[in-house]
Image: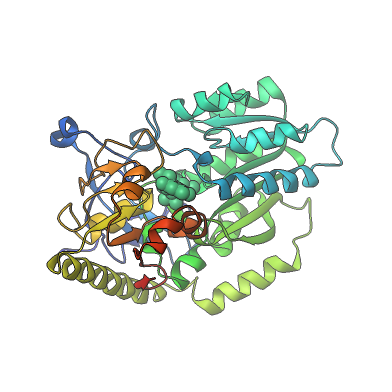
Length: 411
Ligand code: DWN
């Protein structure tokens, strides 16, 4: 038996031990050509839970520079649902700062400028910070002011010097990507105006456990946050969690509204959620033993279904080459003999191979012109939008396979 990986909690510095290993993993968004195969990068994907501060985190993920660079292939605007979500999020942010004169909003991890564009439409002064140059360029082409950088204390200093203090610092699906939360919190404290708001949302640990969506665990998601962990981590830096709001995006996310400690009263929703998390086991290490068993069972069931379909001569295609699918494909040891290709609407991914599993990525046109018997819904979080687009496949007798919350074949 291999010894469980050990590490140090990124928040409080306590010793932590991985509760499971997903084994050798490639970079989740490391799509590659045949020529890249020999130099493909792998690391061991090992999640751990810190009993001291309740932070769910990865031990030794790859350095951020390996993940976010000038060929990052995820663009927020690929989903209409997300564009609509960001429009509503921008309106909510504008509401938080409505009483301030010419307020500045800084977005961390602003990707292709989807949210910045919405803020601009509302007349809100905004600037994004984005380390992946190619997506930052797309944002700038849309007129969204963007600084090419990782968000840290140095960047916060530069932004404050150039634009002044921020009335709001916001982020969607980005804070969980930042390995040094303590540096991030110090940077937020430095840039945020005294009555400013730090508002971020990330996939929620409680939803991941509830529906066993273990595919949320991959290199970019260094943390899976709960309100308990956020409150404890902020407390170390003179910041406080003052409100929470559940979101339906990415299979269940949580929006956290934070402020300088002592500047605003926490809502009753914060206390209620902290209490629910304790009852649901989000503060207890033993919860993750059950989760590990559920992951193992889910992976075994999914693989044996694909093996059985292949034995019966059925054609199976994957739908959406998501970051999440990298965990599933590699953990379940799936290769092109089980899934012949994955269709995805992102031109930058088409023509490449999926990380680790080396399944060809094709355009969704292939799906329409040469429909398979089964399609695995890797973007289960976009199910409604995808089913709507692919009605012809379903009408023609094609079947969808989903593995979240449990393995199911949908007619
Ligand atoms: O945090 C992150 C979230 C927000 O987005 C990142 N770490 C990266 C990314 O994760 P993901 O790749 O798992 O995201 P999605 O949004 O579940 O999947 C996006 C992929 O799905 C894109 O490659 C586009 C594709 N897609 C498609 O082919 N047809 C998506 C939709 C909606 C479609 O209709």
